[in-house]
Amino acid sequence: MSTKTQGKELKVIHGTQDPSTTAQTPGMIRKPGIDSNTVGASKVWLGHVTCEPNTMGPIHHHGEAETAAYVLKGHIRVYFGEDFKEYVDANAGDFIYVPAHMPHIEGNVTDEPAEAVLSRGPDNIVINLGE
Image (cartoon, rainbow, N blue to C red):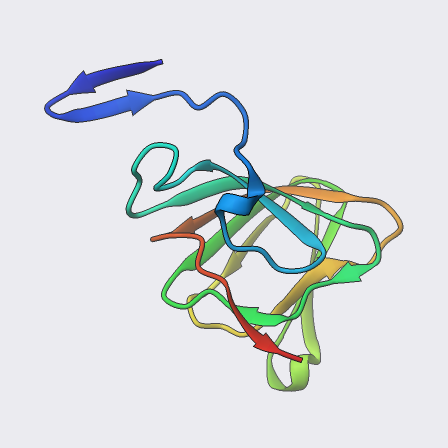
């Protein structure tokens, strides 16, 4: 569905799109819903992420993009700081905020899968820093 007003379109995207169209890190599958490919968005990326049990991604950051997540199911841990010794834990119903350019490692330290709604802007920038 789409409606045009003043040259802009209001759209409904039914379900998520193929994850191969967006940046990924191992252990997490990011499926876009709203992005440059689906609606021509230039300032926001919104999608659904699943995180496999007992899996941590690599060290990375998101460049100029700030990240916000809402945990739908399970448990997500994010390591940060000097030598990645600090961490925050988020469970279903919790929000997570990661500032732009902050190196971190995220994942799922439990035996159950985790899911979240992820928003990032201006795009789903993922810069893997290696291990």
